[in-house]
Length: 129
Image (cartoon, rainbow, N blue to C red; front, side, top):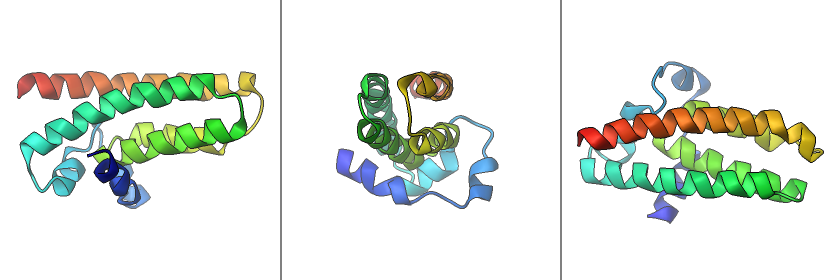
């Protein structure tokens, strides 16, 4: 399943498609890539929540630009797979920042806020099913 999620990272729609979704998770995008399989959607959303906290911790602990960039890139791929465009965009901005750890703080805050929004939304979706 993790490899499937990573494979979807390249499946991001054009920028206009990203901006058209007002929800923290683009359910149309998610449904398209799970072929409407609700059980698979649930599994992918649960996997995203588990992985996102791991990657966020890796970002916080990153001691080098490479570790920082790798964690941001991995989280961006996971977010893109489920259509969490705000998270993916925040990751994209973080991924391009290379510099001191103090300069990373605004990126971490933006990621934390967008992830929290997505995870709350996912929690509501999963509670309804």
